[in-house]
Length: 552
Image (cartoon, rainbow, N blue to C red; front, side, top):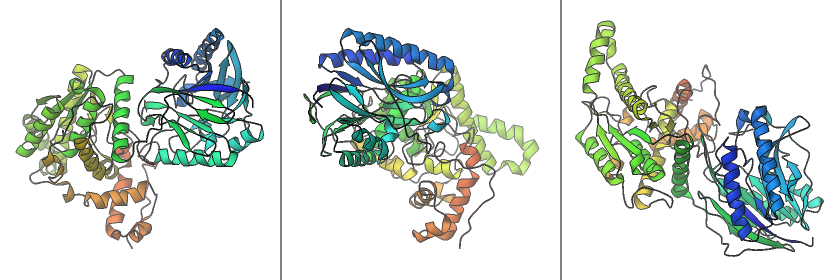
């Protein structure tokens, strides 16, 4: 190796399918990279179309549009500016690959195709792409670039092959979704590849929300000893350049940014996921029911931080069972957040339904049926407001409730997006306390505490009957969430859960509730994935299913 090159990392937020818009954003980044003296600008995995494109990538018209955009970008590199390492789907010999294309000197100078296609959790790449042989390094201005795409870094083969064939540095374009603890996993695996090869490694990740997935960016560079010499802020677009010279790394004004962790990282993930879902799908704002409870309070706070208070519309849908405390807490929350709050009582609608149904149902109308009618009146009302204004209904249910079916189809499950869908109830309280103590760095909401203290201390309740609490129907949330984590994230059976210290009958009951609610979850709105195993992409269970485990 005899060359010196400057590499610019473009940590960008593409819009899936907006090929022209993504190309325009890359052009602007390339102009900024040229000002740093960069020889090469690097993008994330499948940047030109956005990741993951799923079955859209199988359309020939989509592939043709991408090919046209790539060729245009390649032609533009004849201007003497930085070359581009571009993530793109690419058809070659009638096979579709997940590719990294080197655009340089006015042409497509080289192509690297992904070797290891992930097919687990949210990934389904074997469905749409063909795996390629292990890639050889790319010669570029005196340096051999070992380009390994995302999953290729998670095992040894691609990195060792790059080293064997003379690579000087490993470049890893990624579409790696956020989940709790994921940054540490990425960094550990990257460090392992460095230790095995003795090569520095550049890890560039996508940013932004795409349906249920959210990408945190958090790109980094490791030197040949595995030390982090540069990292980029999570949850923010950015461009950073560094020089690679005879194996050494240096950068002007580059720095190591400590990654966010704990509630701070989760809150930013939820905020980013909601912001991009609303903005990329063209909604003017969101409308949600404010009940005075913790779930709707946190959902409203996230929405205000994501979109700004002027785009968030809270509605208090009070019934005869709504307490004065709940009314006051909803009003205090809206005032603190600066968002609009309207009140639409549902008592008259409840009477109308009772009058219509009682001649047919009689005594059967009482109990759960009447409770669900209340929830559905609220859902109907919010959907009417959405139809009239274009604002998206934001569902406020959490993972604990959705897991065990403690939610009403076509009622509180109504909505276009469920921001707390992968957030357990115990996490709802932890995130609420975090938000009251911190304003997120990119948040558009106010400073200071925004969620009323009483909201976080009173017993959780749906207020569908007098003196109701959630614990009338469910185990305490710390117990419920612990059992659910065993069932969902760890796929444990009842005996294993009992060995963790939980009551056998409670564990068996929660298992049964979880399985029985599968049909509801199939009809639920999408929501931000933050755990290793959410309830849609990652956990795919049959609706018709008689298998149960019993206590003892």
